[in-house]
Amino acid sequence: MVTALNNITRSTNNMKLRIFLILAIVTIISWNRSNAQNTFYYDIYKHWSPELETLAAEGNNAMAIVSLGSCYDRADGVAHDTSKAFILFKKAANLGDILALYNLGFYYYKGIATEIDYVEAEKNFLKAIEKQPDFMPAYQCLAHIYENGGYGININHSKAFQMYSKASDLGDPISTFNMGSYYKRGLVTGKPDFSKSLEYFFKVKEYWEANIKPAGLVAQQIANCYLNGDKIDLEKAISYSIEAIELGYFESYLNLATAYNLKGDFKKSYQALHSGYEKGIMSVCNNLGDAYYNGIGTSQSYEKAYDVFKKGAETSPICKFRQSEMLRKGEGVAKNYEMAYKLLEECAASGCGIAQYRLGCDLYDGTLVHHNYARAVELFKQALHGKDMINDEIRSDICRRLAICYRFGKGVEVNWEQANEYNHMSATFGESNAAKHDDNNQKNPYITHKHKKD
Image (cartoon, rainbow, N blue to C red; front, side, top):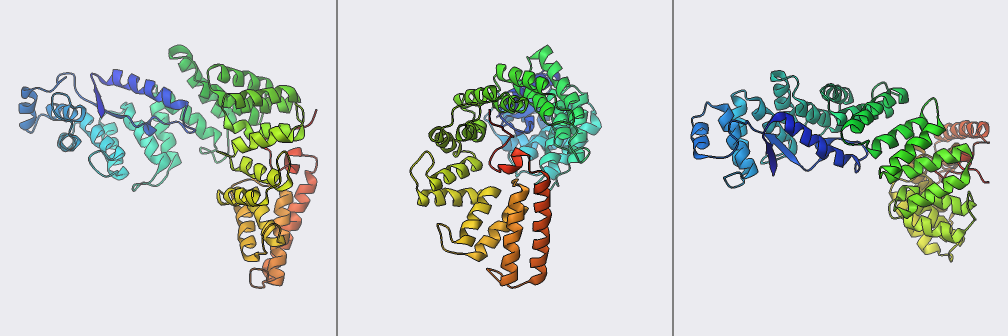
């Protein structure tokens, strides 16, 4: 049910409180992802009454019409009926009422009493802004529409950023946060700008210090910028990661572990990973499993590594791949080729590049399964061109195998030109890998962050 509030200022503040709760849940934060449905009505008509019905029925009192629509929307004095509310909002919007324009846009935006229609939502939100340029909720909705696209609207990060900027200028901390996220993801200038990102994240942090308390997610993002920016600052990354954890954002244990690892303090890195694991943070499983597997910052134990990878496999394709590899080799668990192959298939199907490569090699070499060059070629190409990162050594091997397939017609028609192209790519990746041979992260395609042994 849509909540009608007594005045615009108080309703905006209440939305910010709801938004804050959402911050801890989603990766890219936007209040528009909430299931809450918000609308406004005028103070002069606070509740349903027969007089309100009479005034609305006259047909020219926009305030009365939109207020009655809010009553139907909230089930205030009348039965809940969003279809009637939609009709009333539309009638008041045609009279130029700003709240009706927003509410009608919101109904189209959320698909309330009508199909979701971002084109109609955009049109009404823009009309509301034209009438009242400081109407923050309309900017917030428009930013979400442009960021996500669909329902007749193309994704337009430039317009989304512009809307976030407008809402931020009007005092919305969530839009300020999203501006920082846009700079961090490289959606503003085409490449990540961590310095600019930090500027906006610190603005948000100041807001919550003054109003609600700093959000752990913001501290986490600041730590992440200090870990990945042009000017890496491990001490600040550690400090803000700890702050995020103290605020209850336990996902920051991974950042903390990474910072300690880069400092060379592998015991503290392990301790951070272990603490995150005990808190149920599955994002640490790959790194923690790797710590046990290689004895990094803790005693080496295949058994513990397998248990951690198995747990992480519930949500992480790379952990499922590591579990498959240990079952294949019988490390920390009895060999089980059937289960290893099953997990590998699942992992490859999820788009995990290293799993696609491994399965392709099995099919190419006839390991565990019969030769199937055609599928191997398909998997090699998926791994080579997929979004999941694989290192240059693996890319070189993929290209070498594809060159052989095209040269000798294994799973594909003979194509010498294609074979030569893949041979050239293989050599290029091979040279690149040789130039980075001392980088541990390049040597080990399984780990998320670089580790060294004590």
